[in-house]
Image (tube, rainbow, N blue to C red; front, side, top):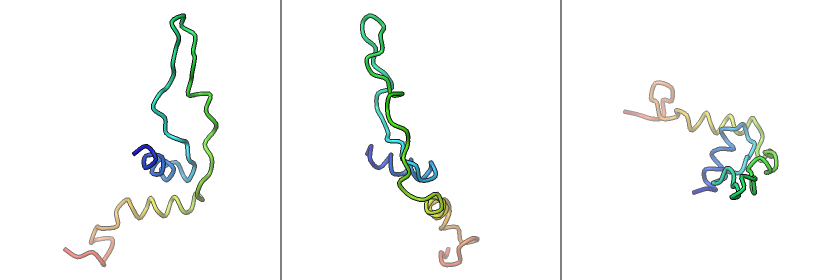
Length: 73
């Protein structure tokens, strides 16, 4: 499920994959941050922005008969 969320997130992000995460930060008993998500690498381009736009457009509304005559009532 996490991988699928990352894939759809990359489409919504214009083709740049920012890996999904479950934990924002971990602090120790003394209040010091042991792990912070800000330490993760920057998003990387996995598909072109044009391809992400096309797939997003197709998924947005391709079954509306007013816009797509292939789909009947």
